[in-house]
Length: 260
Image 1 (tube, rainbow, N blue to C red):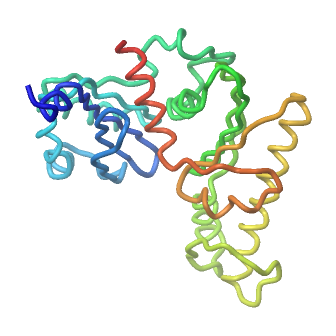
Image 2: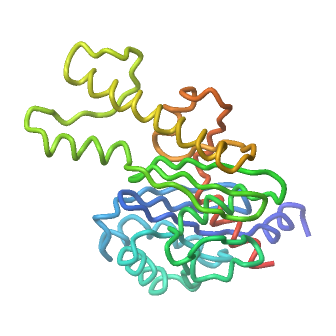
């Protein structure tokens, strides 16, 4: 048997998904590497939309080890699960439906934790370090992980959601695409909004992280993820690491661990 054939036999494929309130990210992993990535709009999901965008994944069907999602939108996950169960031989499952007790100790009410937040925690756990994960999504989430324990977190309004609400509620405020501001004092409405949101959220993030450190009396590694993570990386005095695929990597880690 050739070396090429040996590598093919040893390869495991996973379809891993993250269903958020705004976007859905679906990744095909070959072992631990992403070979295909698809992004969908959560509010557009129906069978026709899924067939149009996901049928390209059917070529992986016979190679799949597992299809696993984390989701904070139950109705959307149900539609996606029905699609995969209808057109694929591998059943689709959701992270919170699995027994995670051997992988992660959950110190809060499990029913009230978003599946994505558990995935983020699973992604960073290493049984020795403490982490604060900041996820910039529809909400801005802060999650506190010690060794292999999820200890809870903080939920703040998301930046883009807050911008949209400001525009809807204030007649003279235009729709603004958020950009990093270098000047605190804006010279027009748009620059003033960008300044308020950038420096305001920088202060919010910095204060929450330092409050967690002060109250818990522990040292943490700080991880940022989500669409606006890079924009705020240098806004803190603390060292920050960006992990763009943190959530799907966590779902994959759970899939691999629970398939051992």
